[in-house]
Image (cartoon, rainbow, N blue to C red; front, top):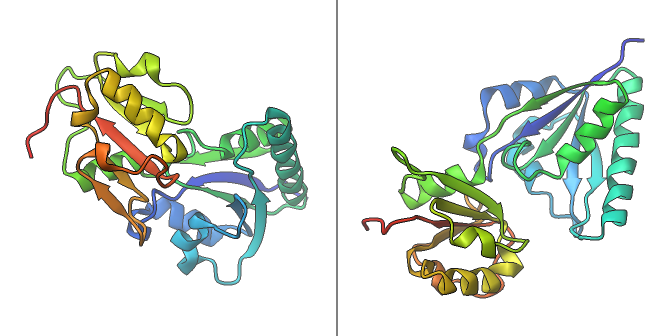
Length: 231
């Protein structure tokens, strides 16, 4: 029996209209759709592609939001094991991931483990959340010779805030308070703006990131231009 293939498909930040035609085609052709599950039954990726899931076999893949590396390794390995079993049976599997699978995606750790076992894999790009957030804010991320820095706000960003570049901080969430304090120390908080849950029903646009509560939504993207933007 011919082995199946695994696709890591980026479904964009939240708006179903931002799904690419290639993503839709591959989802429709797949035998199994794997859905990341961070607990509590909240599956944002599933909501984005719901119109294309009729008749599909679904595979829930627990991906805990923890920093314990040992616990994460167990999760990655268990998910890879289950996917490889399906691939060995000749099934085509699509693993959905928010945004783009190459940008701070949990999926990539599973992808690497499946690839190491000799299975065919393919990454399908999606619209990154920071591009969608910039469009929602009506601003350019970078022009001319400007540089763009992208960093996870879930880790220390003190060394990033002072760099000579436009800055993107992803997944700010519970770290918003600390991020605001760092930006304040570097004199850039007044220029910062943000979007929470971009493209989703509960989207919130923040023209002034200083006004965001210290504990914001997990999917909050903060943009800090190097220079003041015109309103």
